[in-house]
Amino acid sequence: MAIQNVMVIGAGQMGSGIAQVCAQSGFNVKLNDMKQEAYDRGIATITKNLSRNVEKGRMTEEEKTAVLGRISSSLDLKDAHDADIVIEAAVENMEIKHSIFKTLDEVAPKHAILASNTSSLPITEIAAATKRPEQVIGMHFMNPVPVMKLVEIIRGLATTDEVYKQVEEMTVKLSKTPVECNDFPGFVSNRILMPMINEAIFTLQEGVATKEAIDDIMRLGMNHPMGPLQLADFIGLDTCLYIMEVLHDGFGDSKYRPSPLLRQYVKAGWLGKKTGRGFYEYS
Ligand SMILES: CC(=O)CC(=O)SCCNC(=O)CCNC(=O)[C@H](O)C(C)(C)COP(=O)(O)OP(=O)(O)OC[C@H]1O[C@@H](n2cnc3c(N)ncnc32)[C@H](O)[C@@H]1OP(=O)(O)O
Ligand SMILES: NC(=O)C1=CN([C@@H]2O[C@H](COP(=O)(O)OP(=O)(O)OC[C@H]3O[C@@H](n4cnc5c(N)ncnc54)[C@H](OP(=O)(O)O)[C@@H]3O)[C@@H](O)[C@H]2O)C=CC1
Image (cartoon, rainbow, N blue to C red; front, side, top):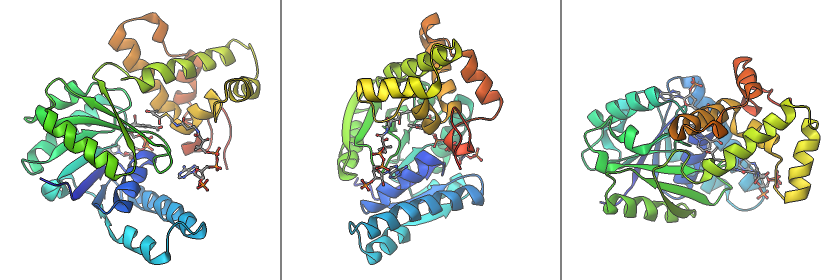
């Protein structure tokens, strides 16, 4: 069955970006969050991004209106009753994801695919909350979603080839590049990226260099578009900590222990760009 109706759970930085690219590619989108304010913030970000596209001549005002017209708000998971695919982008927490997937399994149509944008949590374990593990899959977009080309697609133990194919085809329709990987902690992307970010935080903690110097060395020396500390702020320090904990628990190897400084910043509520302060300050 062709995918037409998409529901996105979580209207934060990832969920709003996923809703935007789906609506831009012609899908009908319901954007769900627990609070109206979260939805309003998500739609404001999408509107700002689309307005920039209009200013740059990449889209007409009419196209912008049509894209926004394809996105509707939802505050209730029961709105998944007519979804062909649900893409979950709530917080990186297994208990929360389990509870969302259990409910979705009860309310979504039998044919619906249940996808998670999790950065690191095992897809097989998320799928175990449902009675349709063969229709559960990881669809891992990169931040910022409207700009980044990759979608890492993760097969759970039970995911069928047919479901993989449908998600792969949808990814191509979104003008993104699908790359397949298996269900191991952190998948490929964050197994490699996050230890580098964590090491940069240890380097700062040990006073080896200032935050600016660490970022300059990696930006100018390795041609990374952002230094690792700026990138951590951009991803969200809470998300970085959750991912390190998943790697640490999943592999049982001390090389993945999260930096104490990262824990301290998260406890302080300094979560990066989204809260106005992380390693840097944002207005
Ligand atoms: C944690 C996980 O599970 C996985 C992850 O996502 S890890 C994070 C992966 N992402 C990265 O590594 C991003 C690294 N950073 C970059 O690639 C770049 O710094 C960047 C693309 C974010 C910004 O690029 P830049 O050249 O420094 O800045 P800028 O010129 O302002 O932006 C470039 C373009 O991106 C757009 N852009 C930047 N940020 C954006 C955002 N948040 N949303 C939408 N568009 C955005 C800009 O509008 C601009 O578009 P045009 O050129 O068409 O005008
Ligand atoms: N940040 C990144 O760079 C990337 C993140 N991801 C993954 O995407 C997911 C979302 O991350 P991100 O967008 O950065 O996080 P954000 O904190 O920006 O957004 C999460 C949103 O989900 C909402 N939410 C929390 N619980 C529920 C629920 N039960 N039902 C509906 N909505 C809920 C939150 O509401 P409230 O604020 O009220 O709690 C918030 O609006 C995570 O799994 C993360 O690992 C994947 C790729 C990159």
